[in-house]
Length: 287
Image 1 (cartoon, one colour):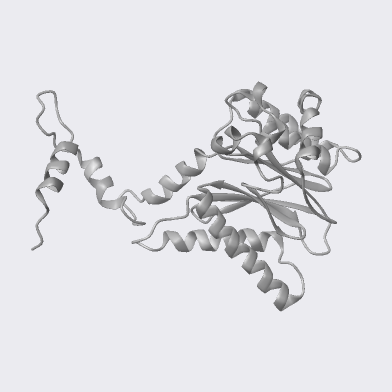
Image 2 (cartoon, helix red, strand yellow; image 1 turned 180 degrees about the vertical axis):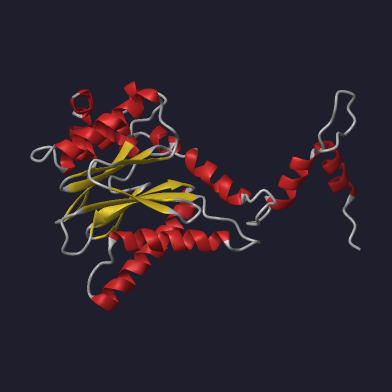
C-alpha cells in the first residue's frame, strides 16, 4: 500500500475543519456526500451532478452578454472581461475579438464563461459548419449549430473522470434562404433554448434591477418596430444593456463587442461603428 508523505498528511490535518477548541470537527453527512460526488460527473443520491452545477456557476460569474431579436435581424453584444477592459483601447489590436465570433456567413455567437473552454467548442462548431458545407453545399441551420454545441457539452458530462465545459453560448443568425431571425442559448449541461422576435437572451453576471427593466423595454421595442429600428436598432439596444452592470455610467464603447446579423450576412462592428451606436444608447433605453 502506498503511504502519503508526512507533509501531505500534515497539510490534510491543517486543512480539516476545526471547532472552537482547535480540534478537528467531523464533516456533516451532506459535506461527505458532496466530497464523494463532486470529483467527477456522477449522480449523487440526491439526483444532482455537482460538476455541471459548478460549470453553470462559472458561466454566471462571467461578463454580461445579451442577444436581441428584431423582425429583420439579430444583435449579439458582450462585455469584455475585466482584464481586457483594463487595457487601454489604443493598445489592443483593432480586429481582436474576445467574446463575439463569426461562425459562418450568417451565423455568429457570443462565448460566455471560461474562455479557453469556449474557444475549444467554437473551433469544433466551425469545423461542423465546414463539414456541413462540403457535404450539402450550404451552411447548417442555426438550430443545428445550437444542437451540435449541446451534444458536445452533454458528451462532456457523461464522462465520470472528466469535467463539463465551463462555457455557454448565445448563437444567432439566419438559415440558408430564410429571412426569419434565429437566436439560441446553450447551457453547460447540453440543453438549449430558442428566442423569437422581441426576445432578449442574456448570459453571464446577473444584471441588477434597472438592467432587467431595460431588457423588458428592449424586448417590447424589438417586437413592435418594423422600419428604421431594425437589426441596427436592436444592436444599439443590446450594446446599452451589455454595459457593465456594476457601474454602467462609466461604460465606454471599447468595453463592448457587437455583431449585427441580417439575411445578407454578419457584420462585427469595428471600434468606430461601436462608438457611434454606443452614443445612442441613452435614447434607445429611455424610449
